[in-house]
Image 1: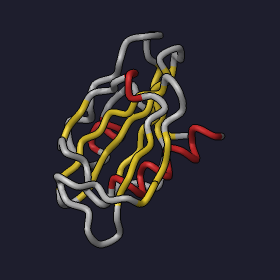
Image 2 (image 1 turned 120 degrees about the vertical axis):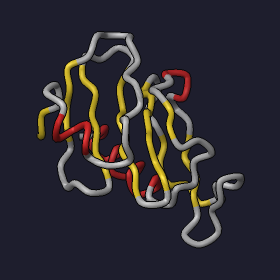
Image 3 (image 1 turned 30 degrees about the horizontal axis):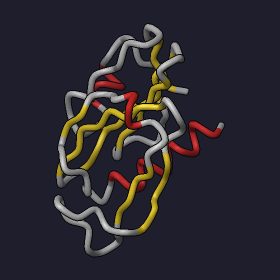
Length: 123
């Protein structure tokens, strides 16, 4: 449940498009980091000072975002599941993964990978 809550918090943050990169694979080294944003002043170079959410230890985040939306995936380095969602879907998706192998970033900033990919299942 905690992961789902964190995933939703992160999803709200991503909507501000405050990430320096538009696409990033899961990085387990990002586990435990706090995500920052701003309701009005976030830019590509300055994410803002409002704490939006925090990744649990050893949980990585993969993301693809642009000015129109986002898709993201979270995965624990010791887990066998990855979880994903996007701006244009109310669902949270799950996929079986190999323990310790980082999931790549979604190919688009929408739900395409989740609804057309055969490995993703809606919760």
